[in-house]
Image 1 (spheres, one colour):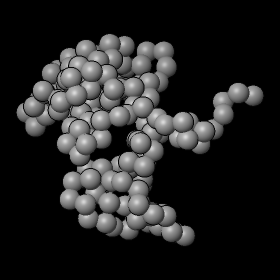
Image 2 (tube, one colour):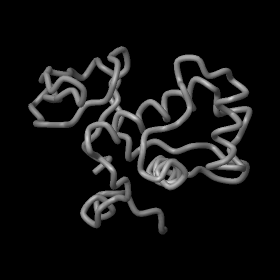
Image 3 (cartoon, one colour):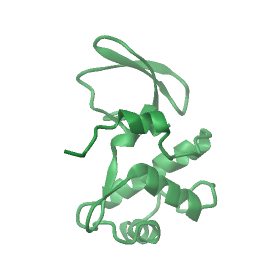
Image 4 (cartoon, helix red, strand yellow):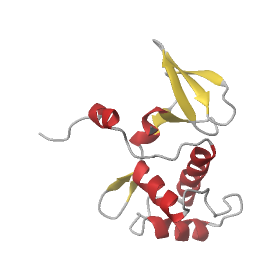
Length: 143
């Protein structure tokens, strides 16, 4: 599911991939369902391709979102993001991912992840695990 959910630099919220053209994508906002074109000059990233730094490796975003869902029992995050202080954000994140890299994962990153989680829950996206066909699309890392 996260393969078709996109973050677009400079645009608030998340978007669902609707269609692909020759030099653009058609995406739909998860918040207001408005469709817009996105061009090659825009920085677009699939949530499937995002990972969080830890002490030894990187944890895929879908695992982090699943841990937040488990902590919150499938509800929106209890943390008030608009007034959360950096230490509050780090403390909350340490509960779900104790070994996250505190040097490379900034409070703004944590806030963005939690706001994405809340938006996904609001729009009914509650299954963050990759589907088999998404796994098949991933490049192989074996030599």
